[in-house]
Length: 211
Image 1 (cartoon, rainbow, N blue to C red):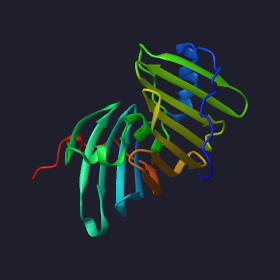
Image 2 (cartoon, rainbow, N blue to C red):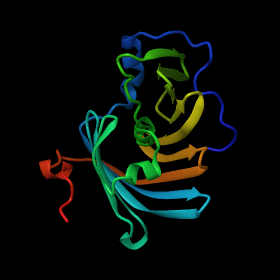
Image 3 (spheres, rainbow, N blue to C red):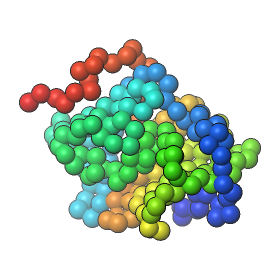
Image 4 (cartoon, helix red, strand yellow):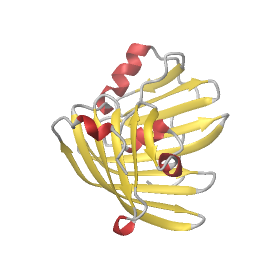
């Protein structure tokens, strides 16, 4: 995950049909219920911090996130469905770490479906799928290597890069992900230590923790 980043999608990529896009993203979509445990580290101009976290993920697009700093300090939690949060505690816990929900999902190895009104372009060959959607000032770009070894995701707003994610897999299991945000300069690295299937989660998992 080093070196100068190259273009995620070719500039001359043609328009893509909804059916084609569905086939491109299908290998990355969630299935059933999973529990992911990870270590995280964030670096910015103030220094570095890190800790542990977990993601309890339910197909097709729901996740309960719990993170904590060293010795359990700085705890945060959130429930995200699709591209919005049902609740976060503290309110800025996701914004402090990830500037875009599609980038958040990419850190778990998932490509999100484009909005219905988006313009979609892309290309695919035997080695990779490269595609993007644009709506208004926002663009999300993906590059998925065949075989599921690596996912790149880039979010742009008004022509400027919001953030870029590089996610590596071990087999079909997400292993490590890194988010680079140019302004303010921030790097978030997640190293996954456990990924396992789970029985369906209890309903109260999706509720805010009681004080």
